[in-house]
Image (spheres, helix red, strand yellow):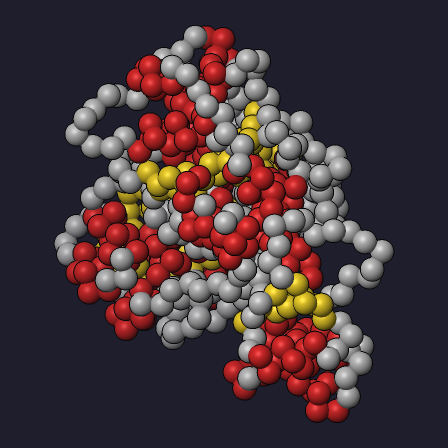
Length: 556
């Protein structure tokens, strides 16, 4: 408990004390209760949906007036007039009731979908048109398409370049072919950038499909964010669409599912109409979501009959893939050897880091000064990105952003004063449903072409349109010459510079480094010490959840 006392924040202690005063316990029992609640609050903030407890802790907790005991049950939680207690014990796990409910409801609803099948006739002939026939190796894309056609829920995983979105385009065409009436389809992703990538891929591959023009026209190209799809409400954790007001879509496909936390995934599935199909795409080896849970990883293990992994890489190869594979396999020596071999794709950057970063910003800043259009400027900025493990401390996002701004100001590329300036790149850090700006959206501050004396912040939407705002209207944002690796999920850049901190911390894991490396399409540079690099690869993400157990227990 000492470690928790050191690392838990004031909010964790305040929450625990608030609950302790209402627990009905006194003296040492109340103190023990508060210590457990402090730890639960802290663990929740670290991404765990629950906390493991022993028999002694269970006995103490059940003496309070705030805890109920639940068993894993194949039925949905029954609403009743009995007040819902804020804490739940299920087996050896302690939950806040809200997160227990998310897990319970999500498990039951996914299992209900998993029981629905759609046997198809003449499916092999149709698959032959979309996938090359070969007897040498398994065509994982073909197998994924067959699974998606025959089931109501499908999870398609795979690393970079394995063709997840290419496969989805073919699945969309096949589903429209085999449907008695045109399906109403929604395409979504957790962030605007991920939505843009999926939209670009579908638009690129749709024209070459071996099907009629009518089928092609029935495949949507517009991709939205999950928050827009569900209808986010201002200053609220709830959405316009839910079980009582479901989405109208027959099929929902969501890319970058590893980014989706327990609460959002539960609300997404809750908002589907009972007969709607769901296809999730993601890389199971990437980071878990920032918020609570490890949904994609849990589903991947618990529902093998509804999960398929694309194992053949079609475009992601060479030194970056070798490095990523070594990191993913937990082999630091092999990874460092790949990184330090002489090649142009991957390397270590030891010195003059800030000078190097500042140099990479000059092309897009110069294009702003020359009056280029926003799409050109945005593309130039998104070519290169610095990815950091931490938000604060040495070698963090805040540290790098400050140093780069200082360097660019010294070189007269940006003004030396003022929060808003021409060329400032920003990252939205909190959803703003009024402005239709969402956590993770990237914009660039620059002169308004209609009024060059005025600064506006430009954002590129998933549909390719550009939206502008006065800087004063944007309240929750930060400069983004560097971003956290978590924030980079769903994005791709021509070149990535990964900067690790000077000392080891719990954030550093092989999943974090793998995610950072696989954001790069052409070039990766890494700034780190060998000891930190090795320790990072040897540390894995370990989330405490009960979702996998619920899925496995209820499916028996």
